[in-house]
Image (cartoon, rainbow, N blue to C red; front, side, top):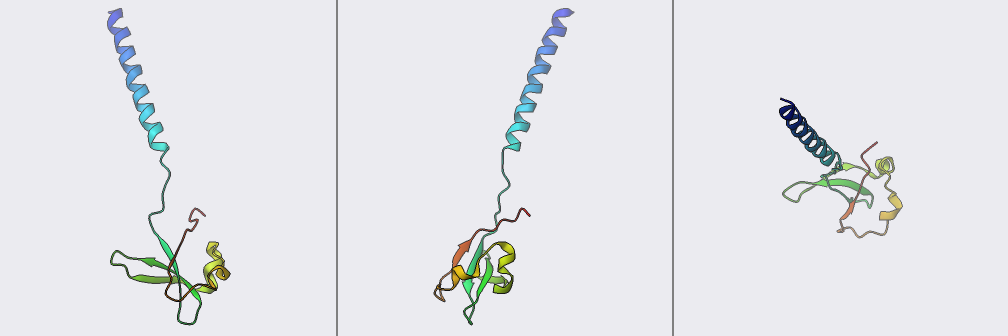
Length: 94
């Protein structure tokens, strides 16, 4: 009877250690932003923030007046050619 209790205690402790290990592994994964943002120039020379869909089309989201709200400096894109597309990284945790 005592041996059965000791064996069941050891098995329970091993199962608990495995469960704690699995939970610890899951917490290490950092959330990742899977949306990519791009800056292109509009026809009037002002930068716009875009997203790109699966087909490769760019859709404008934000104009130059509101880019500073996302930590993007408009003056970094002044010398950019009209056809160029630059990828930018946004901090979306706020």
